[in-house]
Amino acid sequence: MNRSQLRRVMRARRRQLTPQQQALAARRLMRLLRRQPLFVRSRHIAFYLASDGEINPAPLLELAWRAGKCCYLPALARGADGRLRFARYRPGSRLRPNRYGIPEPAITAGNCLPAAALDLVLLPLVAFDPSGARLGMGGGYYDRTFAFKQRLPAQQPYLLGLAHQCQQVEALATAHWDIPLHAVATDGGLIPCTASANRRNFSPGDRRWQSPKSGERLSKLAILDSR
View 1 (cartoon, rainbow, N blue to C red):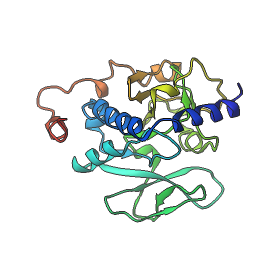
View 2: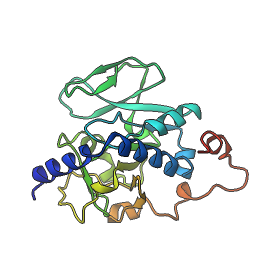
View 3: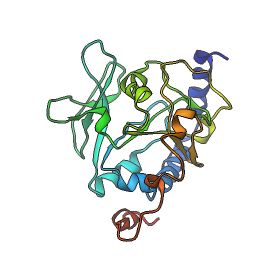
View 4: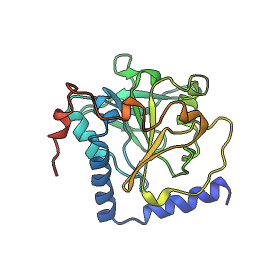
């Protein structure tokens, strides 16, 4: 299948999940990531609002709010640069639909953070493979936004794809502009990616993914949700 055909198949696959399956996947995702040291240590985190059968990070978002983290949503800025802006998202923030009908915060001078200043970005996707290749919806917004990571692979933020387990494929064809993920988190587990660019920037041995040293505080998050 070409990318367009695969996109149709995988979107249909995730939309076939029942509401009960979606809710269970969201809870499993939250439980997987809530104690990951990278998530615990990250102060500025970009989320997304799930649509079209995407795995829902809402339980993790609520946990991040309760832990006092700064949370952001991607927003489409006016203009032709095709890059995302990341606007602060708080409980009760007013949202408005963008050109695709997806709710997003208003972009103002005081509520946006540059992409390179984020600690962690949680990306939606249509399909992924173990190398870190990501098939999105076809707009190329995330690839353009994080194109600087081709020159500076060690530059923040960490790019963590979120997906249902059923969205993994053996291999994806990639283009030179595709920005690989550092890892993918699914309802079935965390998958460190193997692309050569990512091996320099992510491995289970990286201290940002390791358990903290004595004296570093994980307790605030660890006690928020003990289910």
